[in-house]
Length: 198
Image (cartoon, rainbow, N blue to C red):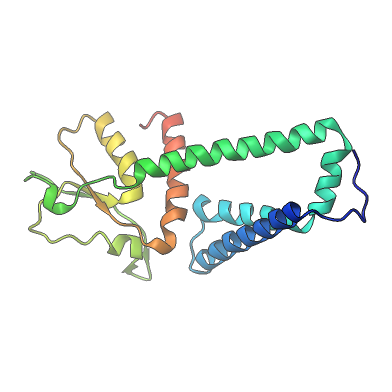
């Protein structure tokens, strides 16, 4: 099966192109805003790359479909690419579901002998929003305090260090950077696992 240059595009193909263009624009806009704020990490760069790819695929839809129809191998590669993307997204959403709701509020933590507050970057001497969200009253019961996305890895590291009764206290990640931070943590967790840190 071959596609001619003047072959009309079906309604479903037009919808797919529009959805890809919209998704690409959203991912690119998110990444560009965060890059403009000085955030450069895998949780920002990867969405930019995915957004650019979706935008390019929408723009070159006809050419890609022509390539896809040109040989059986092209069709198999196309299908394999989508299967890999779907499996990765399933694993990502599974990881995010484990991060969601992780940790205790300070009021839920029993009295402890020590407090560990894991750090974060500052900008011009002021805490970034992620760090600012960790402020907990000095007299509140505390244990290990970190951003919600970092607690799973921090707790695994604490367990590996044989630290007894570490209570995780989650500070919410600001919505503007939440999913970028969670995406970055997905790869950080995989890296820590490969390096034997967790």
